[in-house]
Length: 494
Picture 1 (cartoon, rainbow, N blue to C red):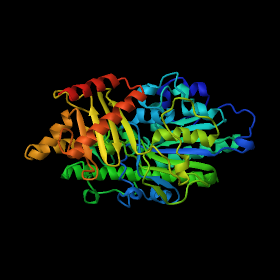
Picture 2 (cartoon, rainbow, N blue to C red):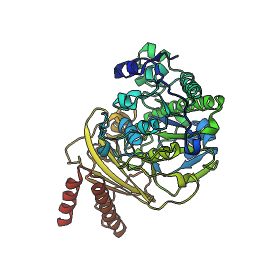
Picture 3 (cartoon, rainbow, N blue to C red):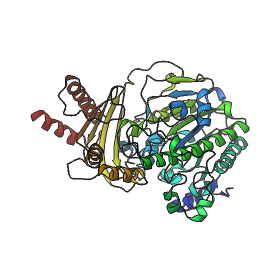
Picture 4 (tube, one colour):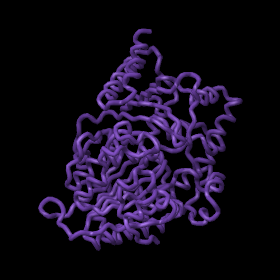
């Protein structure tokens, strides 16, 4: 269990936060009336899983035994089937969510802090006296002192971010504090599953010490290779199936963490007064997914329950939304005006089952891997076409990222020695092409690059996606905008 500390002690060093469970209770002022007319605004519980593919949960078409708690929650909530994160790597994805801005507009393009002049969600909610708490991924939001969490426990204090019982205890602490101080709360509960190392893997024994591993409980259900459905963007090889099964087992444990936190919310009697949001911070840590700009890199399972607004069991399959939209949503719920300059757009009317114009595409980016290597990418995706510009692709630079650890990438490279088609795909992954275009209606897993093809539909789509990408880069002040326009002019002159 966590030990109360002063906020100064909590924020004095990031290492202290990472090393042990800590909690800080802000000095509580007089109890205040909240919201318009003195009504208290709703609590907000944002639950994230780490590196879960959109299609893994049963409620989004995945295996029915992997996410039973999320599937139950979806029947009480509204699910968005065309939701994306702005980029597919952990810290900048979360920073974009909590600033409502693209990484090149908030300064956190990789594993660094947001700029001092960029407002963050915690500051807006503090205007309404929200108590703020975070479980897991504490040091993945920087600078820590600006977030000024009232309560925080990081990975090692949570069974390496994988123990449902410890998450439940931390959540119960936050709920008790909020009730005692008569304040609404914003809690970000972050499961570290299904991020590598996967359950039962060699990586797990290599990355965790025996003492750390002893704090990690097994999943309620362990999957085998025969249970695994290999994603269409990967080859169906034995080691790929083995690793996919390990990933599913870790996903099941993430679902158990979600169930444990929801159970504490209900036990505290706060479920009817709380907006609950479930997301994944990016796609699975496999080749062609995480740390890239493909649709399955950023496609996220987004589920929202707002009592009194969302219709149980409803789905939105029409509108493309971004996790940056959660910033203005939470501000609206709290009764505060969102800061100027955010890129997110309030989706409240969508939650009420209405239509919003201008939600036919998303723009996503990639900047930097967890090893701080730069592979600049820009993407424009709609329901039919996926377009990616790889600014780094020059025919000689080789891509390298975390998603090539484990079993899958070595299995692909080994099999490529006797499989020419797979060899071509492996080579393409390493070097890419400056442009990629995919017809998602015919090629949902982005296997056949149509950029440079001379069919009329591909030519027309490529020109349209280029124009949309250039316009977006201009509007958002993308620092690579001039480089992109020069590249387009070179193509037009060729």
